[in-house]
Length: 142
Length: 433
Image (cartoon, rainbow over all chains, first blue to last red; front, side):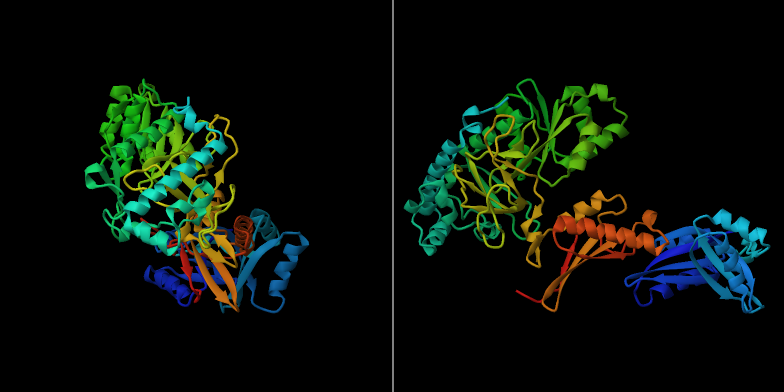
């Protein structure tokens, strides 16, 4: 279902990302997945973390511009054609993807994080096709 | 109401003739009594007799704030000490303060121009004017005070500060006019709301605000908070103090009392005089001042003059609100750029706050301008296309105002240095000059 993703505005500056990961580490916040959309001057760091609300608060206090965005996480088999099958379902139903990123966990599964304008439609669609959606409990730290 | 129709509505041709006569006799006076000016005129090969009409004014050298500092404290006075009845001085945040002196007639003239100013705001004999400008070496308090007495209004010389007392007297005495800095007016307005004072118990109708830059947004804020009409008054101690120019009820710029203070707009780089309507540095020649007349004093304030006739009936030129200081002016690819222009663009856009830094550099003999703008968290989108869209909008708005294109760089919030006083808005890395 819906997973909270943290988006952080980062200037292209040596060490800036390390400062951020350092803050999260010091506050015992786990990062499950992340990606960076980069431009010449800045990047947008997107990540799935163990405690999104707390992490957002801590990063804001440290002076970062932070936004919480709703995304969908989906487990797919880690083998040829696994991603293709999932994407085929999405494109066949005309759901536009704003961005996505993936990570493989090593236990034969990969996880894909997807941001779409019509997020609920995407969730309904993936459920209908019996795709394995990531649950909040799978990523959030208790 | 017009306080002095003779001078405020004088036909321009007649006024220019009067200005010529006044400048001519003033130049003779300073030549005879101020060694600094005598030397300066001699260096330029100018004899007082060469200055006969207002058209000759442009031949004369400029006077700068530095000249005032160099002649600290009394070097530019034209009269013996016995004739000086008052001294005022600027706060002098950068270097020595500048001192100005007044004769009895100077105080009379000052009261006259402030009386004209107050009349523009509809102030009359039956008004109670609360003067909340500081009294002291600063010209604000005493300047308004004497003008208000000349008008015949009742003066409440409360001076600045002591907000509770200000509000109490405003309510108990029934002040109808408030004179102070615009920032203090806004503060008083907020205090009025906080103290839950019923607006019905306040009789204020007008405010006369100046001595610091303020925006139209501030004007509407003050007008709303205090329930008054807010008027802009302009002045500087070097010329006289408040009352160099003032807005009439039409509020289409401030009328300069040109029979006393002769204005020019110059190109701050070349010193060349610019025609009406063009933006440049404001220069004043206070020709009728006895104690300390100055020749072409450079105010460093940037504005435009308009000489078309005002609906109020006055023929005096109007100056626009100053857009900045010529000290702040940058020349980038030959175009004059003021940080305040960038600020106004950012203020007008709802997605940005005016936290910015201009970085000027030169690459391959071409000036480059980068404007760093802090991203506001509430407008931070996690999609590149949205941020790029914002960047393009800033870029388009900036280039339409500045007339040159700039690179816009979005930076993290809080990374541009804040300062309480004069914020650093410009880094010029060009190794020229």
